[in-house]
Amino acid sequence: MVAPLRIHSLETGTARIGLILNPLGGKARKRHHVIKQILAGMPDIHQWEVSNASDFDTSVKALIQAKIDWLIILGGDGTLQGILNRLFAWLPSEQWPVLTIIPGGTTNMTALDLGIRGKPDHILRRLKHYLQQSAPHPAPVLVERPVLCIEQAGREKVYGMFFGLGLIARGVKFSRSPIKQIGITGDIFTTLIVLRSLLGTFLGKPHPEWAPVQIATVNERGERHEENYLFVLVSALEQLLMGIRPYWGHEPAPLHVTFVRQHSKKFWCSIWPLIAGRGHSLKKEHGYVSYNTEVLELLLDDEYIVDGELFHASRQHGPLHISVSGPITFLVL
Image 1 (cartoon, rainbow, N blue to C red):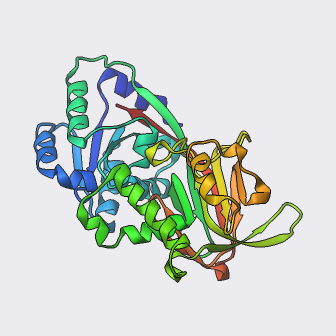
Image 2 (image 1 turned 90 degrees about the vertical axis):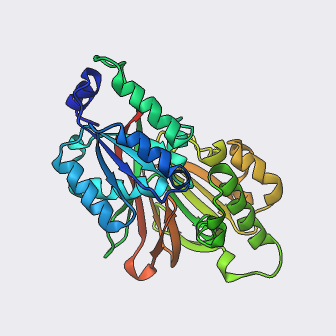
């Protein structure tokens, strides 16, 4: 929970404001010139650009030192994830600034889940207009979201909003190929990646790059179960890109989990219920499982993604432990 003093500073117009821009993000790159023009007319905002790990380190340390009350992030899911990792590592949660996301990446799931849509330069102009209003400012619209914490022995913790295995991770890896150079972003880009994932699995000769993921899980009785899955996802978001909601658990817990087993029955007929939030009609015995939880442990040797960034899990380091952190507070423009 963000400190009440942060909220008070926003309402009275006394907030120290910082902005981190990733100029390499899919949407931001297309509009970089106009974005820089708008930012040049906002000199009262502390501004940093990030394009590599060193930039992230420098900018987050600087905003902590400047005691920023409101941090605006102009970038995509990977930019947010890089900032979250450093904030969790370096700053107690009660000292965090309020966060605002301006969707400037190739994928912008968290921004869309919060209801923030539009071109980044248009949203920046709305921000500029908001700041130019006389104090007290209108009461800010604040939204809280939990955060995933992914841990494995001997590795640094990874924080983010979305975790994926199997076809999801394969699709992200494919997105790093020349297709990204086309310049397509948002839902169209995501649709291409999803289609390529499905075609890579169900058409032509099997290829290891599109293989399912093998996972061992342990139940509450200590019994170990090994299974191959087309994909697994864990999300702290209420919806994903294209407005899909591929989970249907009813448990009162913050993390949404979905498993789809390899060779699941009637897969092609089940795609629409999966993406439309109607998965309650799908059956566990057919290979579809979804529930809400606060913690999950998986044993695997494979790649996984967190907010579009690739990582690797190894069984020799023990289980991959996913739990809930936060919540963190977002201001929605």
